[in-house]
Image (cartoon, rainbow, N blue to C red; front, side, top):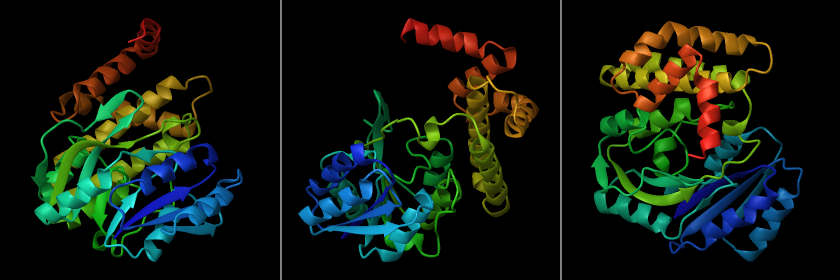
Length: 313
C-alpha cells in the first residue's frame, strides 16, 4: 500500500483536481490522507465530501499549525509501506505512482524520484533512469542535479521516516530530506514527468521578502555545518547548496526594495557581499546563479530584469 499524504489549507479551488489526480491512478492500493489544517474557506467540508465518494480517503481535521504539522500528524497515522506527499494545490500525472513503485521493487530501492512541471518549465525529466546510492543521491540533491530537497516528487519507504519529523517552520524540508536520502541504501531516479507544481500567490515561494528568507539561509548554513562534521565527502556539495540559497534570497531581497532595509534583508546583503568571491569560484554552482550574483553586485539586476520581462523571453 502507498499512503498518499495531502496537507490541506484554504485551497478549495484546487483540492478536487488534486484528489482526482490521485484517485484516478492505475495503482489502486492506496490510502489517501487529507489533513485539513484548520481551513476557513470550505476546504475541510470538501475533504469530507470527497471521502464519501472514495473509501480510500481518510480525513483528519486539526487546528491550524502549518504544513509540517499536517505532514507529521499524517505520518503517525499511515498504514502503507510507502509514503508519497502531494501538496493540495498541485496534482500528479497519470501512472506515476505505479511507475515509482515498480522502480522501487525492480531495483530493491527504498526511494524513487520523478521530475516535475511548473508553468511551462520542466525539471528533471527526459533522461535515462538511473540507480544511485545514498551518497551519490545526496550530492545530486545538494546541487539540484536530477533531484532536490522538495518533499514531493518522491516515493519513500515508510521506514525512512522512523524518528524523523518535519520542524514546524518554513522551508521545513531543508533539515529533513538529506537525512531521509542518507538512510536509503538505494535510490532510483526515473526522470519522468510525474508531478505538477502550481505557482500561486500566497505560497511560501511566492511571498514578498520577509523573515522566512533569512531563516532559509540560516537553515542551509546549519545544514552545511552538520554535514561538514559527519560527512566530509558531502561537505563541498552542502556548501554549494548554502551558496545557492544565499544568492536566491539575495535576489528576492533585490526584487523587493520598496521598503527600508529590514534586519533580515540587511543581514542577507552582508552575507552575500562577504561570500561573493566564493560564489564566483564555486565549481558546482550553476552559471545562472553566478550571472545573477554579478548583476546584483554591479547594480544592474533590476534594469536587466525589466528588459528581460519586457522582451517576453
